[in-house]
Image 1 (cartoon, rainbow, N blue to C red):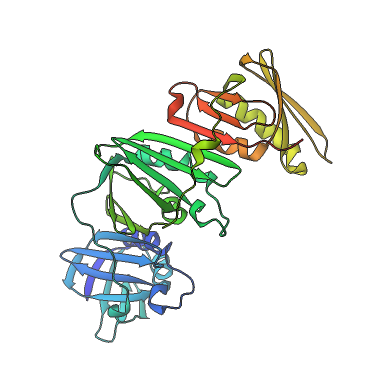
Image 2: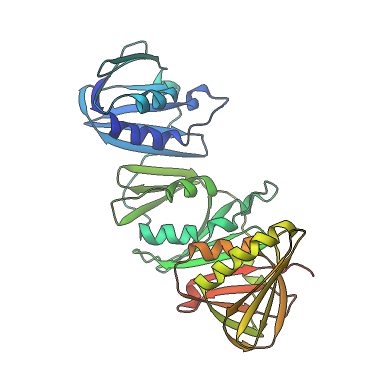
Length: 364
């Protein structure tokens, strides 16, 4: 195996794959990066058996082959000068790395020890604008549970029906639902739960292509875009029927500026964080009053609102209110209430069916 590449291009892809590499594994091969040359591309892969990434980098190939290199390879490339980098792997899987006046010999491993990785096969099951998918994930990912005793809630539920995609997440205290449109119209209804890890990696990238292709293969999901293939096992669990907790009736509705409410809540949290983030919301007349008390002191904010319905007083978690307001990109939002012991439901003012955030109250 022998090839050369630019240091900065190679570094970007090995850092990308390296984020998946486990620090410790019962399978030693997984603690390294799998490098394989096909045609004129260097394929760089990593997996922890639950999720993984494949990257495709065009290179100058002198000799094809494959090898497993320790994750230390990433540290070496990162500190090399931004010059042409030459790598040669011998029959004992030792890699000679040369760049400028720097030389390394890195001990690799037999590539046959690496587990078989999924392969993309056309056609895709669905195609969606990547900016829309990232928005849908960002609008739901904060409600994913981290409680291992509730494995079904440790991912985001994807539902596909006709040409509508719905993402749902909950940690039992709050619920997020976000909807969008895909390019492929389906004749059947498809549901699957995608774990948090691969989605949190996916949204970190700035892709050049407009659309991302998605494939479901048995118990796996694959995302293909640019020079990347992201893959993950699906959570084979039964997701709860969360729609039943959404109240059908609302006694009070308040339309507010998202930006004004967010800024007021961020100030209130300076006090409420000293008292389990408890904030009292009082909806009346033409405003929402926010109050919080703790050992540090007290605070009160007033946010202008268009109120329709009964006066209401409810206690909510400040941090849980702030999280969705930080990621949704709309001017106005609707706060819906159904008595002080019912949940608070937030929707977009325009196109309210496209987003729902439900938050259970704190008993006063």
